Image 1 (tube, rainbow, N blue to C red):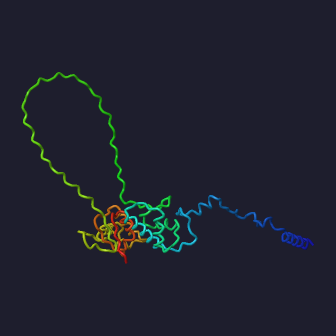
Image 2 (image 1 turned 45 degrees about the vertical axis):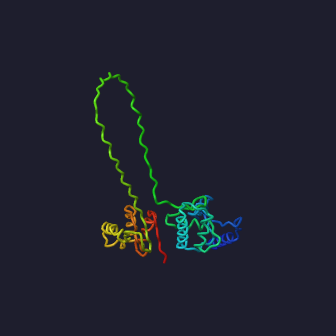
Length: 277
């Protein structure tokens, strides 16, 4: 009888649990050992949605990075032809629209083109496009000011006058100072060759050859191209930044080191001439 009574009580308890009403407002009932729910605050939700763009991002962006780089080249060419460092949205939007084949150009497209310009362009908060200069500003240090020494008046007896005839000193000959030589410029010929007016041009392979050998010796490899994760190319670009060449340099974009070194050379160059294929 005790066993039967125990089974009956257990069955009644199960029926009571099944007939319990649902929790208010449709909330699920959690077990005591369930993990607490995590809810994001407004600040955390805003931080998670942060993007590198200041302009509103459209719902669809169908253009590739190569198309945005072409749009950046169009902006840079327009500014170099007119020798300006800043252009407004009235001039920048049509240029980007022509490169992207887009009729309605939003500020986002101009900003992304500047972001993919390899550091040559910058999108300002006012919507204008600024051209980054490769010539660093010179800082002139001021000489420390020294207080003048106090004047000491001393009374000295006048010396007796002695008349002596002195021959006039010969007039120095005027000599012209040598004219200062102009600073040598860095001119890049990318996928093209100079035809006239250039006395001497050096190949990009000859410029980086000492740096390639140095990286290979420091890492114990036959060629920096054999280093993992492409680190050898970045090491060569780092040495090129310290020892940037001067003069005219002829470059082929098919060179395996050009992709890593082009940002350093283009930012340091005074003139960039790029051929079309």
